[in-house]
Amino acid sequence: MIELDRDAMTPMYVQLANVLRDRIRRGEIPVGRRLPSQSELEVETGGTISRRTIKSALEVLADEGLVQGVQGKGVFVIALPTPEQQ
Image 1: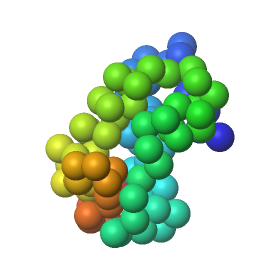
Image 2 (image 1 turned 60 degrees about the vertical axis):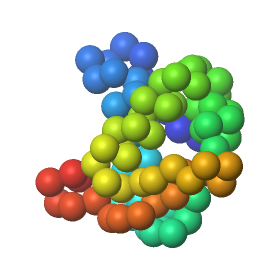
Image 3 (image 1 turned 90 degrees about the horizontal axis):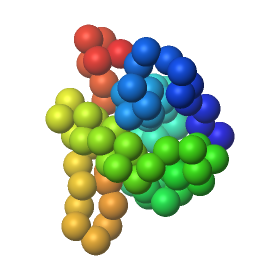
């Protein structure tokens, strides 16, 4: 279960990106593995966040060069976070 704090100063999409980045860093989602789908992430967060929020979190990770979407396949880890990204 992913727990996010609605009352935090950090936006929800950033909180989710941080959780996913940490899972990648710890090897829970290794390079080459597909991330959970948007619907799976929605369930993992207890349905408390929108698909748009999830998409924004994935865009953050893509902009950092950690993940890449493959049409019809999902979003895959392509790199580990650098020390600056952690």
